[in-house]
Amino acid sequence: MEPDFVLHLEIVLRSLVLGELLLFCVAWWRWPLHAREGSLLAVAICTAGYMFLAMPVLAPESGFLRGLVLALTDALPYAVWLAGMFWLKDEFHPRWLGIVIAAWAVWHVYFFGVMHGQGAYHGISHVVAILLMLHLVFMAVAELGDDLVESRRKLRVLASIVASLVIIFIAAGQLAADRLDRDIQEFVSTVVVFLSVTLLTALLLRGAWPRPLPLGKPVSREPADMLPPRAAQLRQRLDEFMAAGGYRQSGLGIKALASQLDCPEHQLRKLINGHLGYRNFSTFRNARRIKEARERLQAPEHEPVLGIALDLGYGSLGPFNRAFKAATGLTPTEYRQSVRNRR
Image 1 (cartoon, rainbow, N blue to C red):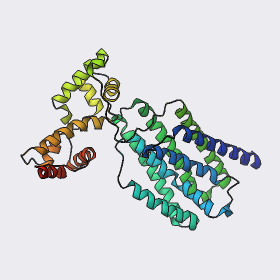
Image 2: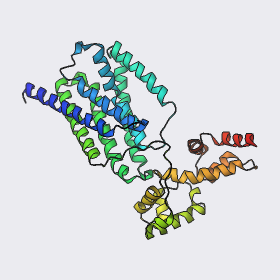
Image 3: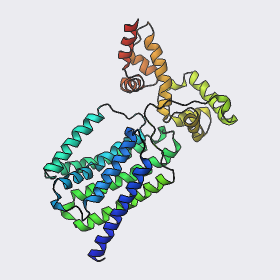
Image 4: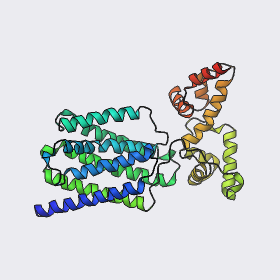
């Protein structure tokens, strides 16, 4: 292909991506903006920065403005990882997140806006980007069985792999920039981003991409007499299993539970998600475990916390502490002490 044709085609593709990202922001925006939705909008903004970076309107002499766009471009892998964690893990809401993002943003603005991206950090950032994307794919695959939201289950691996491959491709290209033709690298990267954004935007417009729900959304429940007969029977067996303490089984997952209830896994997933309101099986299971743990921690007998954890099916104290604190805001020891202080 002629160089001028390639350049014009690249500009057209970048412009189309910018239009698709604008469409995504308009379709996705709503107020108040929750952190999960904001993370996806951040991905769109950072991707727009990457597309805008090589446009003729932003010359290398643009100075500080170009540095800010470089900062957005470099932030893309982090935004993708953060959005992936919010989207894949309903309980992902670290308290340190705001402070880390603020400090990281100040450093990036300084590094790219003032130092113009000159320094070892740029290369280190690309390596970190690749590691973050590998972690994202691992999380998408490893926790697939715990996900009860059918629409999200269909997309979590596809979206994570597509986004991660794009970021890894770009980061690897930047690391090997000295050994590659820059014009060809930018053109191929533009094509890859265009195809990926087009695919994900098409899924969004078809309604296949579920919105991340706000944190703290109350669990919805329907009376058993409103369920179809087959679902009502399954719910009765499920309630009996849980009432008998089946949730204490170590390593209990949706597949093992479906086998013990003698029902198809997808029917059990639909019941727990669609009729009981849980989006992850671990949340459903832990709700029963934490309820019993709270009762036992309130008892006058000083039962060891480790004994309670093991008896409830946790393999060690760490997972029990994390699950308990996520549900109550306190560790088991802190919760027990708070109960004693109220007496």
